[in-house]
Length: 311
Image (cartoon, rainbow, N blue to C red; front, side, top):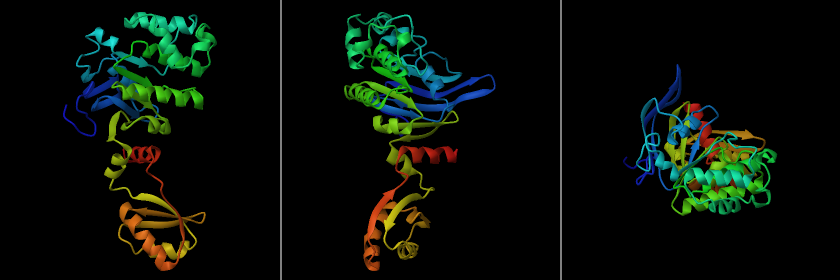
């Protein structure tokens, strides 16, 4: 695959014109993308097709059309790839009668990794104190960490995470994000699927957005937003002379609208850099004091909201 927003050079995972349907329902439609080292966020609302795509990437489902290659192999035809591929599923796929330590050791056996590696994986997710207790007594967050430990036990080159932070508290969440980022920094491929945009924004340098089974956008957040030239930026401006500044702003090129919201100016512009450079001189000419200038839609949440609205 060549380089591009949805594709990377040196890809470890390649998805080429992949579709998946269940009877009359199309879950994934003609998606082409690739994943390389580092963390890539796979975004989409519930039911968008993210989990179906990940199950195909990990060989749990066969594509109805198209091809998938992981480390240059079809995971359904070459089971040896699972020595270097691991999945943390969204479902609680754990054996409750096993202790945490037994569960992670069992994962090591299945992956062909040394049983001794279980101790390091458990320590990595900070589950040592509970490792000898049955998983059936674990909280949701503890079960999540046990699943992550089971995936890490083989030091996989490709780690696929489906909603990996569900049920974790803020401290656990921050720690797991650090674990994933460290793995990525050491040259591994980490694919994180989530509908919680703030979490992906903290983890991923690159984002693929899936809406209604289709790839809606790819790239970093700024690049995706910058490419949406047909949608004005929204900017919040606080000033002591809101009406005077509003009237003056309307004379600038690229201003699509100005509105008052609870004493704050909400400005829509197609030229964000131009607004930023013109505002200081405009405020000085009015002797107005500007105390805030904040683009509201530079976050992943706003970008994704736009994408959903456009499809």
